[in-house]
Image 1 (spheres, one colour):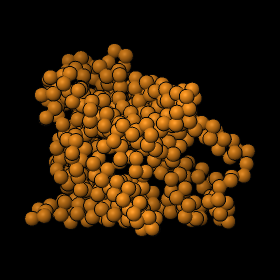
Image 2 (cartoon, helix red, strand yellow):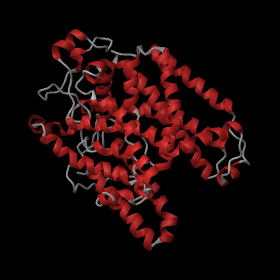
Image 3 (tube, helix red, strand yellow):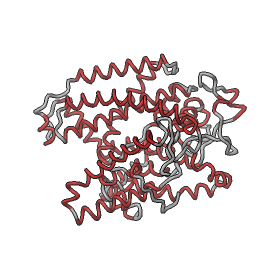
Image 4 (cartoon, helix red, strand yellow):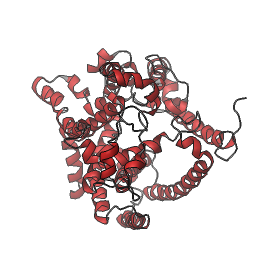
Length: 461
């Protein structure tokens, strides 16, 4: 924590700092320029709001402030009793992981830290704002693209025209892939006794398909990738209430379907820019998905078997942490098993799902101001980005923010200005190369000395 936190781990910085416009990093220290800087600036405004609001929030609750030092590293992964001790979720769950209402009345509900509540409130506001922002500012473009596709209107794009020399991927390839994946998913939810009904799986996939144009447009236009998991958890809790396992499976198949579809579109667009044949891109994606899935499963099993104790611990180690999985589990229990009791109208955290409704309204403000006064800065006010980063510090670390700023300033304000030729030739290549190098290093380190292979070697000593 701290306003001057600084990290030197490239795995946290990654190449986007050399790719995204400089306003993203400059506005970290110059928030007053948010009204006149290009679109990435709202991301940093949200981060600075996060820095400002956390001390205010904890000053409101003396008890929570006293607990903060011990909850800091747990705020995104655990739930607590009201006195701050860790909540034992097995006390209120039946053997099938559904809610035991009698036990729930006895032991009470789990609580989240204040920073965690702010984090998910911000995300939910961002979710609602994403749909309205795209509809207001880019709805005509999106609708026009659909109309052009279904009416067969020629596309006036130089990259697309050059790709016409290659045969397009037949529609039945996509249909066959979908049917195979759908059959596999249907088999999994029943053989694993997930308690997720077949119709809920279909609803989740349909929702993903409906959301994809909005999420994809937001990512393509701003470089911001909306986080939709809380929305799917809410919907899953409403469709199949009282089952944490069903909620987890619903979010998995709906949320990951959306994520994978967006990644595939991004890869196909990259293939268009680099003039790769569409069928070759499709084949490589399918092969990579199959090989990557097997590879990830084998490695995950190996790591879990060898580092299980550390992964189950609260703090983890400098190499291993079970934070993401523990957080996934805690949220599945809270939304799936206890959703109405905790997040319903009479629940403690009703404001969290209400954030989606709030998010539907906030993007209208700058849009109306622009329509009335034609202020250009209104176009830069993307509340989907601002709201998302309000709770950016809930995880307890922020060293990467100033690292982002330093890399972005050096790349765009120095190299681009004084070494423009080098910038055009090597800036993006350097970012991608260091990304790849850091990933290879992490893999080698994990298995050579980190203990993924079973033997932990003290490092660097």
